[in-house]
Length: 69
Image 1 (cartoon, rainbow, N blue to C red):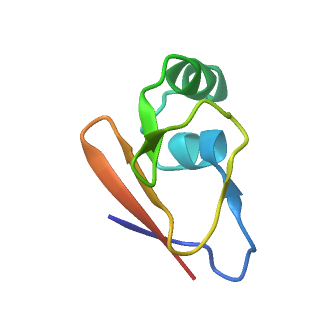
Image 2 (tube, rainbow, N blue to C red; image 1 turned 90 degrees about the horizontal axis):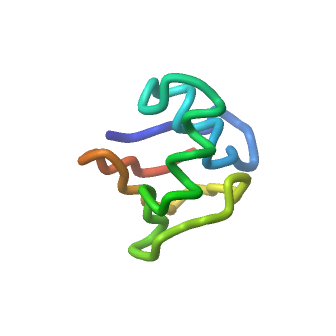
Image 3 (cartoon, one colour; image 1 turned 30 degrees about the vertical axis):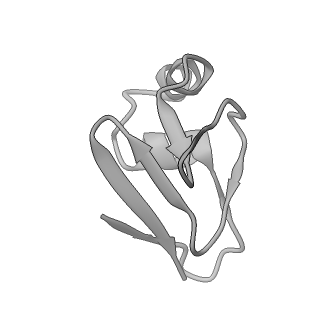
């Protein structure tokens, strides 16, 4: 799956999870990240507000999300 930033510089990890309906809510997205359920560029990411930029790859819940412009 490709997520386009549409002119934005970045998107925060929890906002991406919520926007793509991978998480049911912002609170659920935070719990997912705290429990190590998301990988950013192959490394488990625990920062809820990690800034995702073009070229980043997020893997969570069996989905791969590539960040693009």
